[in-house]
Image 1 (cartoon, protein in one colour):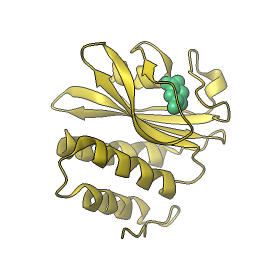
Image 2 (image 1 turned 90 degrees about the vertical axis):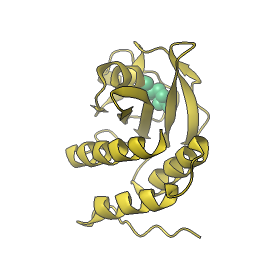
Image 3 (image 1 turned 90 degrees about the horizontal axis):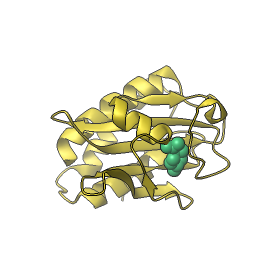
Length: 161
Ligand code: SME
């Protein structure tokens, strides 16, 4: 049984979250199993999320395709030039959107989403996909969330791809 000890708001939150995610994927090679558990862990740990999941780059179709997630059913395919996910993929950097209504081209999969944080999954300079976090609150994500989650996902990407 897995027990979530990381408590958002406590000063060692991201240290604990990183350790917990590493122990979740430790010794498991199956990509989809690892992504499923990571999306669940983050969904149940970060506050005010209505969606948390992965889009993976499909080399053949040249677009992002829905992967493991928590939340309501979502858009399946996203072109690289579309939405917040496409922006994070093509710019190869984390994109934090405090108010999705002000992001041109935002793709509204869930109408309750008000803010979004999308982190690219990069290993050896290849972008394998993105992690997308959605919140029903405007300005839900802080700069610390952005920096820490980006750093965790860099190390996680090294391990899982
Ligand atoms: N809003 C995203 C699309 C994915 S859903 O939020 C799950 C975007 O603009 O790329």
